[in-house]
Length: 191
Image (cartoon, rainbow, N blue to C red; front, side, top):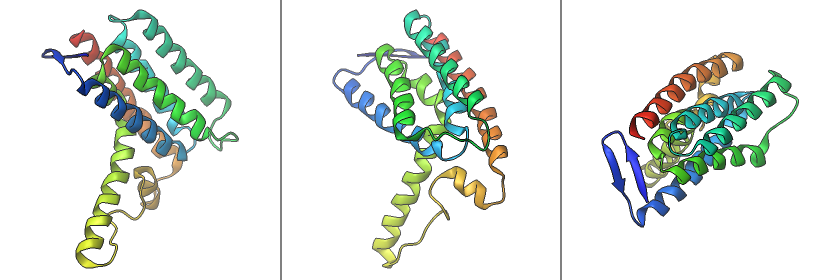
């Protein structure tokens, strides 16, 4: 029930279960949304697992080993399934990876490093939520459904603006690597 933050420990009590449920749903759904491009979910998941492994290492070294092995399995999947992928991860793989990330955070209380390390997944899920809320509000006010974005997921929006799929994935890898290092650092500092 304790959550370590850089400012100290915070006792959440019964709200810990609510935060855990929110993490499982949001990270799993964000991972599922990012599975639409070849290598986007696998590579960013490997980097997020690396960041979480660093973050949870002082609290539970076994979970650090688990996260490192999950990162290695994601890299192995990427080496086998490069661009112009032949295997689709699907809901089973992406939701399991998101659930494993959320489980690492819920077992150690490292939710803040999880939100930092999983920034790509949070951005993907947030873009869909913003689009749907805007559509519902606009439909109620004006009677018609106006879209904020042309497509729901952020990576599809980038594709509509002319970015190629490998460039989008490479940019996501660069951003995710910085976020993973930052999440690992915040986890080490707060532990």
